[in-house]
Length: 322
Image (cartoon, rainbow, N blue to C red):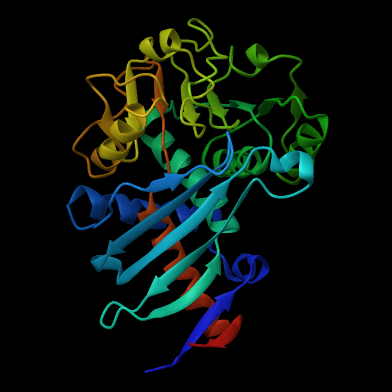
């Protein structure tokens, strides 16, 4: 048995990372395994060292993918003003037979990609196939990764972007050029929601939710993906939804009880039920639908497993003594 631990930096991970479409397929398998009851994954737990900063521990075991590990991740919105990434952390994987740690990976790339891939996977079942206009509120890392995810999976023709930081919109616009997509900068949040087929809210997580988006902005037939714990959505807007999906029912209930989200409908559906075919997803073109994925450890551990295999094949990374 190798008595070393492989360490992968952020650049190492990005060098051997799966594409967005490959990441979506990895997550499809994760949610099939989860729907079948073959994933061991306690609700993530966290601590808060500042009023808006949090650190989460996220363990998962996927026997079908021969993967086990934990992500220790921080989200600090104020870091944007410091010139430091808002989301940082590490993933540690373990040998399934001995429990020995076998790798340490920077989690930044994986977190960004798997979050957007989960949104795109949900949209496959919840959005209208002909959706062509994407609205983005929050143009940071998640805004850019979601731009790529939806550009790869829908026939997009236009992007409407809002962020109070002009430099963030400029960065997203540069990313859109590589995808041959025009970006319209919105002067206010409303313009990035109304008349859009697909909406992504990727602002800071707030407790209680800010409720920027009121009832009536999300039009009939639209799909929204909230990756900010529904912080941007008012309760009245959420009540207009015909279908709300999340990546883990237990985790949603946990955070809703602690002052996040602000809304827990009786008909909340697990994304695994859509992927497994247990639930049909969108039923009519007029339905308002949303995925409010909070992020689950199984996604991180599964993607990390693929990254590790590729890094070993390519001889990338630094071996550390145990």
